Image 1: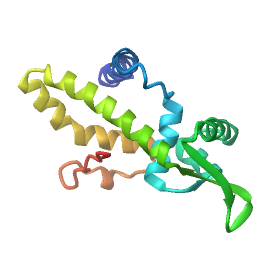
Image 2 (image 1 turned 90 degrees about the vertical axis):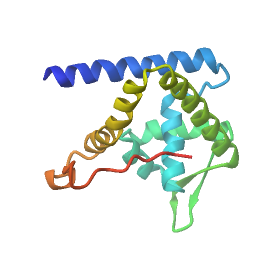
Image 3 (image 1 turned 180 degrees about the vertical axis):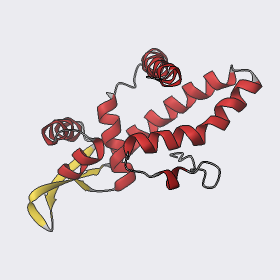
Image 4 (image 1 turned 120 degrees about the vertical axis):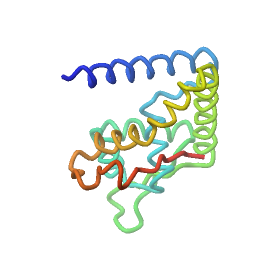
Length: 165
């Protein structure tokens, strides 16, 4: 592993740990496990989705997704219903309560990260801002390793940073 990859791995790991810890401390009401949040985010982005498709999107086993869906159904955050086109499979959708919970989660994280960014020196904030498009492309490459070099032409086609509202 290159020194750059090692450093990025360490920083991302520390960032995730710090976010989890600070959210639990600063927003104790926010208790959704990350796997559930990721499922809700997938539904928010893709709409009603079959359980198998969710498993593919999340890169999880179908039985793992079924378990997550069951917990979220019990908590009223998603619905699971037969697919009208194939009643053998279930379609999962975000409920109004699920959308509110996801919005609360997003606001808590945005607030926490915003507060931390505000404490950085202006130059560091600018550096973080400038790195966001490249980090977004890195995420895309990790999520879709088949992207070819032409799609990754940083200078010609900078990737937009998607911000969920």
